[in-house]
Image: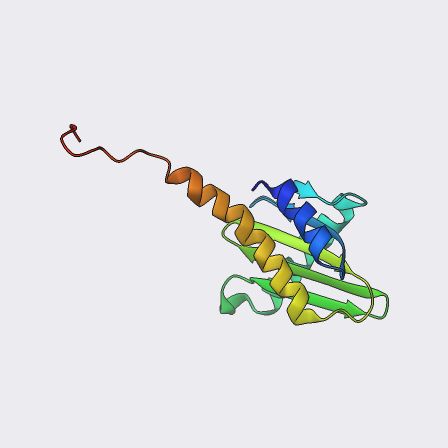
Length: 127
């Protein structure tokens, strides 16, 4: 599925996610659930950068989260793509992360399927 479809499914299934964005490797918004997507994208990029700065020798940051009284910000970076979500107060961290990872994997799964569309030659055909 494409990123917009994946986010629509995320919004439908996850009661804790209020807003979400998917970013490409350059930090540009690829898809969003709407509502202040640029602000959410900037926050996600800034959070990952701050985490990277704190632990520069640890490798690439793949997950960061901030929880405040008003809600949380969750950011996952995998395979050149980033997903960020804003939640309401007291989110269940493990569940939100699971939902975000599942959303990213849904987008990636479609890309893997497209790569496999080359037809194998039938027996007796030239390869």
